[in-house]
Length: 358
Image 1 (cartoon, rainbow, N blue to C red):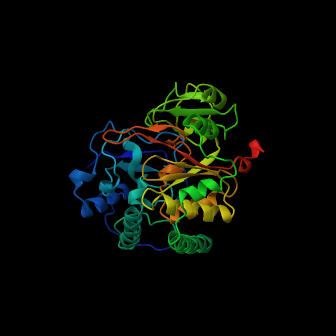
Image 2 (tube, one colour):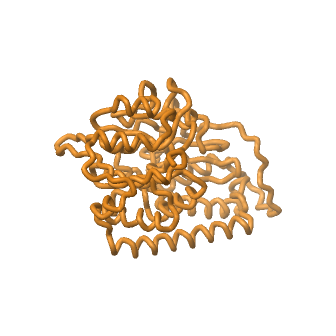
Image 3 (cartoon, rainbow, N blue to C red):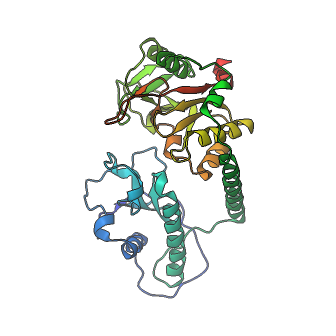
């Protein structure tokens, strides 16, 4: 038996009238472990080290119990070294659902298919009398909401397919910028990008995207007065404690959400941003990462959930949308081994879309 971590459970269990045949039943957590063992090599999937850290408080991983695993689809993650092993778990939810949770966007479809299979197997095991708990029963309203979401996702994919046929040249995007970005120096780009925040906002800015603690916190006006150098990152949120960390517990306000796709190509992505803006998305900036992609900065207002849903359906990186995720700061110099230096250019700027800048 592999190391299993449990959490206090206070929610009421879902009650069903169906009474499965009487037999020796196994715990839901053990059944969940058997599900993965039947599909993947246990030696490659399960984490046996008892020192594995549980998810920190404030995260959305609320469950009765969980089993730390290595994502079976991890080859698509694209990162060799992980500093945090809490990113992938098999969780038994407070609602008795069993599912694999992985925070990497590259494996989302594979994880969704696996979870659908586990859900079906859980119902079969319940009616067969192997386990005590069935998955939660969804209401008609929940089923309708899911169907509506799927229809919106289908429409989003169709829209993106049409948009991709007409890429938007980056020069044309920049020419349409409400604030001129032509011939800006890297320092001016950086000042303009940081200037989207309120001067008193406490921002995280660092050359190393893995740095989560101070001294990477300063107010926006302080960063502008003493601009950072080299390959610099920031997040689209503000923070409360300058001596805290760049984690959810220290978040103050989510100012912006960032949308990024590194496989569409920059001009196709720019066309998608233009389409979204024309349909009501408050686009405030577009930044060339200096690599494969461009980043669209959207104001985090009441329309944000709609646009997150749209871009997720279109296959954009879910990790970039996290409030605490490090992304490229305009004007920074991207320096990588065996590659020429590239400036993270500011391609588009619309300060009028930011309420506190009007």
